[in-house]
Length: 105
Ligand SMILES: [Zn+2]
Image 1 (spheres, helix red, strand yellow):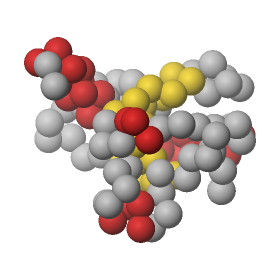
Image 2 (tube, protein in one colour):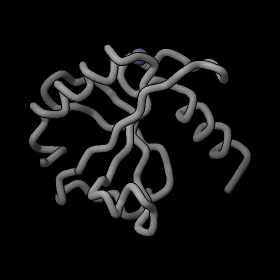
Image 3 (cartoon, protein in one colour):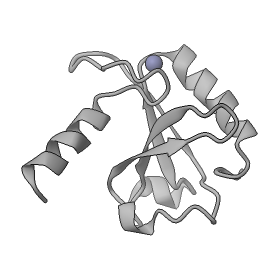
Image 4 (spheres, helix red, strand yellow):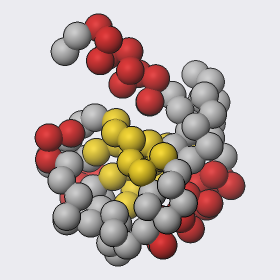
């Protein structure tokens, strides 16, 4: 992994998945998991942060792709989201429910 890729991953790790506001190191964050649509091919991105485009709102969101051997995967999640506030988490959840092309339940 090059230094560039590393810092980009680090930036995504510290960015709200919904409003893309930067998260302070000591800031309380709100995370939750979701199951992705099987058509979404994320196998090559396991353990990485990726950006996804919501087709309905054309909004870019940030997701962490759960690796095969992680506890979150055992709970049935393919993606994890990290947000800056409960409100962002709720708005993101509401948006994901509409994105049936990307996510399944
Ligand atoms: Zn936010």
